Length: 205
Image (cartoon, rainbow, N blue to C red; front, top):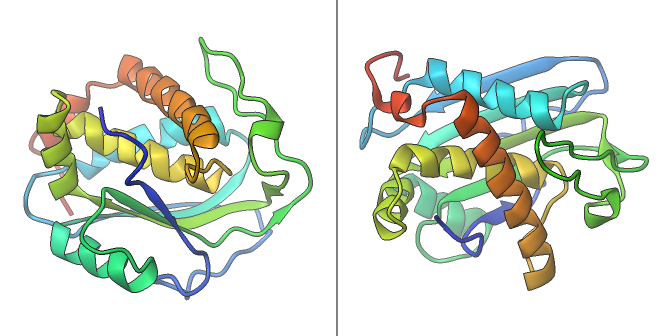
């Protein structure tokens, strides 16, 4: 499995799409776009997986989320432009969320709930952000960690959403907590879906 070390959280200001404005109005907008040609991705199945993930982590909340599946050159440009890091990476999250109040708990079936004080002290009225996932990195790291690129893809999606929920990976302690939540959610989703189906014929754009 991939480590959390290369998964970086982008700054909310100055992200790729500033046209998407945060709002307190109840809404549930989910956009998925395939902008790479390395691997076929069944976006219909992936949408079901993302919705199941949100059902586990953000059951009653509003969201306005966009997921972009890109190749290494685009991810390299994003990483260097917005994070000032050289080269590609696996996932970058741009957080546009406005936060207020106390963080709610993350409840994962079959696991202990993560304590609220392990996360940011504010909860968003609207989960709002863009998550960029690199398919080249998913393929490469799947080989390295002896898993499938489809499983890596789901892991990156989970990782990006956890960033929006207040998790971070900037030091060892919080990285360990984030990794525990990430593993639990990937396992939960794997019991509901066959990730291998993400490469079967179906919608790819």
